[in-house]
Length: 214
Image 1: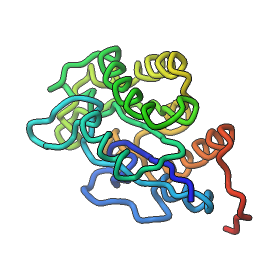
Image 2 (image 1 turned 180 degrees about the vertical axis):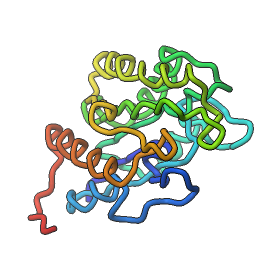
Image 3 (image 1 turned 45 degrees about the vertical axis):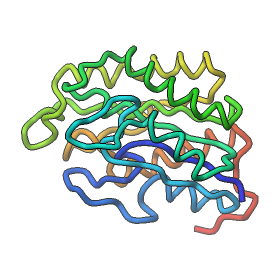
Image 4 (image 1 turned 90 degrees about the vertical axis):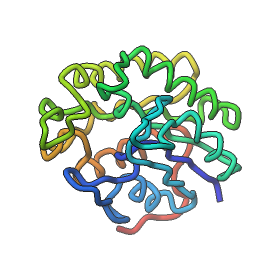
């Protein structure tokens, strides 16, 4: 069965806004994609707090570029990959511009390209952070400048994907962060993202050959 790696952070893991709990199977976007692509295996490789290249001293093992080679080797062979990272890179502790975050993403893409043709990699720029994400009751690891940086990732990632010959999708064009925490997808957001990802995968020649029954 062909394998598709979905590599990302808490919005790939399926964190429920305002909690430390995970949406169940059938709600998170990766599972919805899997249910439609019945002749593929979607590997859910999401981790809360994951960055492109930054080490978080408070949360170890979050550096995406460091662990990605292990994930690729563990799940070998891969037939396609989806990567959606960058939200956590916007935290004020890292003080990174969209350009620098893009450089980190590019290191992850280069790692994937050691095992996959560029056109088999779907780069997704993440949803934008909400206006009040920095509030104490939400996620004060972000600040006001984090919001602007998150909005700038779309253009940066699109340029990188074009340069590498990857596929590109901007999650922020379709889905928004829940107002509960201004950071994570709600159930509706997961459904929307699943649909647009499925559409993009179909353009890549990845679609179910098995009739789907809801």
